[in-house]
Length: 281
Ligand code: SF4
Ligand code: SF4
Ligand code: SF4
Image 1 (cartoon, rainbow, N blue to C red):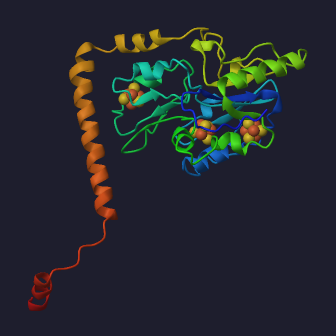
Image 2 (tube, protein in one colour):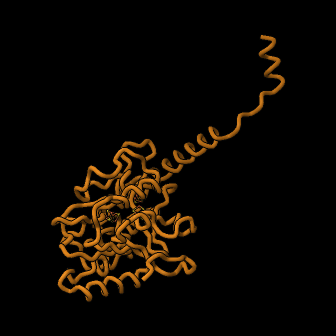
Image 3 (cartoon, rainbow, N blue to C red):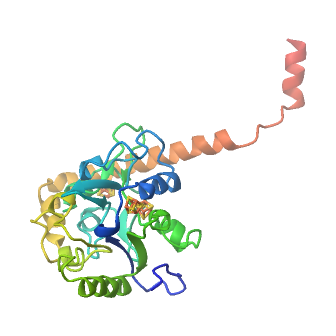
């Protein structure tokens, strides 16, 4: 089965299926993600392979070790995402392709999304003067524009342990593999039902509790997590405070962009008058 998708029909929902039994922990997926998303070399792959806590603002996917297996960890792209529900300005939003994408231009830095995420997958650029929320975006922009045929991480995987395709086709493939090897796999597809379903699916021969699928993850959508986050915030902050923060944020972004545009603009030719001034002075 080909798992690489074309995007002629934008209403189809896409997903990533990771088969833990095929992963060799090479971290080619991590390297490809870092290169494609230009997240720098500070935490380049190889020395890690610890756990989900190694996700960072510059490392949107990582490899966790559990029970002798390597397990990819990245945003689950929930079909009904609590992070997007918690976001007051829709900076995080669902797409028809299945990705939970991000618009940094309108994000105001409140970080409600980080509190709401049941998987704790979002990270923040704490050290940046213009911080953004950072997480896997399923290569949404590059894939939807046709720049990439599939996410960089799945394209880079040498063993096809992690593959991209239509969600329904990947669920069928996951069931086929489990049925073909019933003694090998745990009879469960992680992400099929958890939190109402996700666009990142796993099959495995070991439990994934310690690799980003904690037991408390419910088997239904969790918009109540967003409600809980928002209910802990004073109403005055949500209205006046969030509004002021949003205005401040937008102004800072606008000023930053204006400064960047000015720096990139060609230098103005000097006027004859200014030359005269220099000569005469
Ligand atoms: S930090 Fe706030 S505004 Fe930005 S994406 Fe998260 S919830 Fe939305
Ligand atoms: S889908 Fe794209 S952003 Fe997400 S982990 Fe893979 S390469 Fe990184
Ligand atoms: S590239 Fe494939 S085999 Fe290598 S760590 Fe990533 S998922 Fe595993």
